[in-house]
Image 1 (cartoon, rainbow, N blue to C red):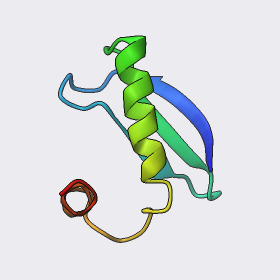
Image 2: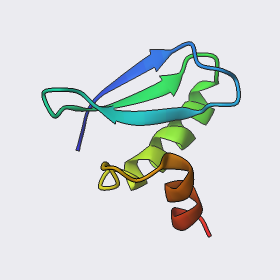
Image 3: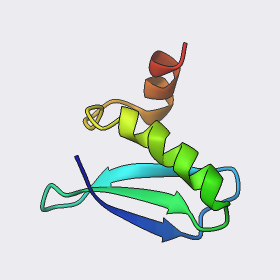
Image 4: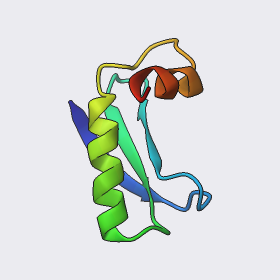
Length: 67
């Protein structure tokens, strides 16, 4: 489960991502430059990846999850 959601100035082409900190807390980072509606969409997308944390390459993961 995602513990925290934060906004950050990300490149416009990046909607967001999830990370796990050293304490095992899962954090969703959303783009502060995007609209609220877009961030809600991105958040819903990231929730689908909640169990995908691990050593897999993010680009490969996106291809596998969104064939």
